[in-house]
Image 1 (cartoon, rainbow, N blue to C red):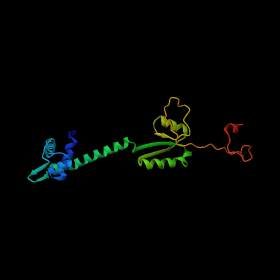
Image 2 (image 1 turned 90 degrees about the vertical axis):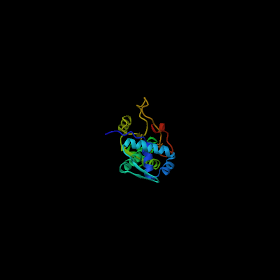
Image 3 (image 1 turned 180 degrees about the vertical axis):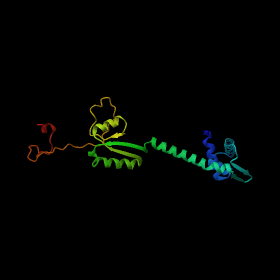
Image 4 (image 1 turned 135 degrees about the vertical axis):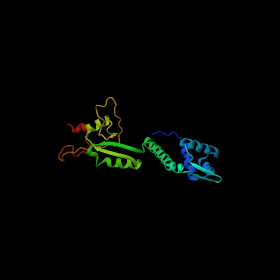
Length: 196
């Protein structure tokens, strides 16, 4: 299939003229003078090899070749605009996919709130969440099989700094003791005392 060499300005000018069917109105809508519009249409007709418009005093109409080209030209311009918008959204992080690995213990605690907050801020990003134990989660991060891993603490073997960490939640430690234990009556227990 031959690759068309059509400047977008010519295609856009063609669509606008096809909608207006008036050179003056189309030129005004495009923000250009009428002679450059006529030149763009002429160049496009040369590339097509056929007239796209009939020009009569006070009247412009599409030829059969123009009617054939119009839907494809509109689709091409719309597809390009959609593609640019999608690329901008993806590039800015407003769309795409985020793969998250998490521990089962987070499923009913912190994870729902994090997911809800993320979806409110980035509704067009698809979330793929995967329950994983710690070692597979760290391996998946290193292999780029997931984008984010929710961990209780950074792995001790990350001396090379392969992974970046950010604290999203801190949880207090709680001592659970039998009621008869000597430390049970205390409001706070130092870790050093509980080890005795």
